[in-house]
Image 1 (cartoon, rainbow, N blue to C red):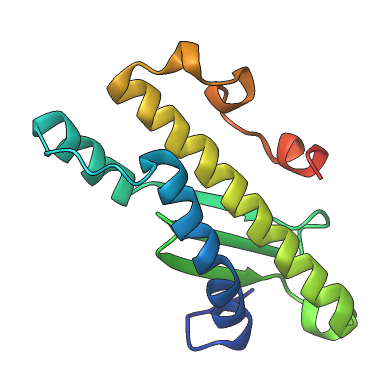
Image 2 (cartoon, rainbow, N blue to C red):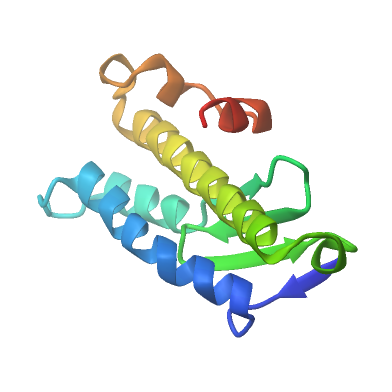
Length: 139
């Protein structure tokens, strides 16, 4: 397996593409409102900053782990660069990144529910932990 840090082209491309999505996710939950922070808010923010999620490509060639969508680790399975044509490799990488984003959204929603009791206001799919199959089936 190859580990690629942000200096690697795959990881860098994924981070650039999905950084905008990170900002959109944050804005959707905050809706532009910035309340005064109390101890519960600070605890939530600490836990949200450590939220670590993983998404994988359908065939398992590539997996991406992200901490709060701020840092990304891309793992390329053995033989992927040799076996896959460029367009398939890119598709695998972007699918893994989409899975990571979806897992983050669900994890963030669960944290919000845990800290602020929003369960009744969240759709059932947001309250349940995603599975790899659920991420793949949502495509």
